[in-house]
Image (cartoon, rainbow, N blue to C red):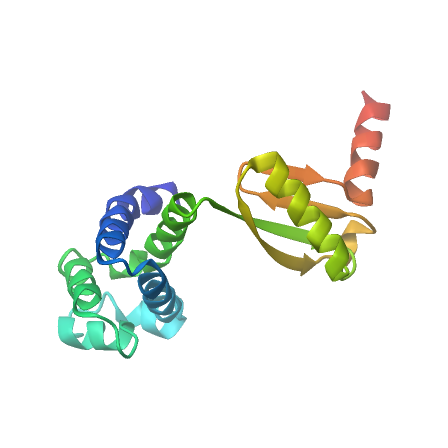
Length: 175
């Protein structure tokens, strides 16, 4: 996986620079997400390396309707370098660059049960104060946590789940 990220990084940076210069970060973000979803489909993933698939056909398959000329040129560049299979990694790295530029942190809050909106607002406010950035919260439910929540905000992971507390207690008792 790290090799795929290493290969994808310069393409993601180039895409980001182009999108930023055009003032179209959101449009590029959507177009890359679409292309990455299509490229990740097992049927398409098997088709992309096939030499019988023409470059124009590959681009037509991956480019969303209404994609700008610079985006289709970017896909063409990827096709020339046989890098279309790395679209998922490129899109992920592009989103990281965009979040950094927009001073946004994406946080995933995983809890045992759905959290009320008020609790999510409190978590969001606390993260904003701690990290000094805008926070975009994504939620998930994992019943195996028993109770509490795990917050993953980039480099910061806060495990306030009962499962995590029990695991730490068990580790402390056995050492």
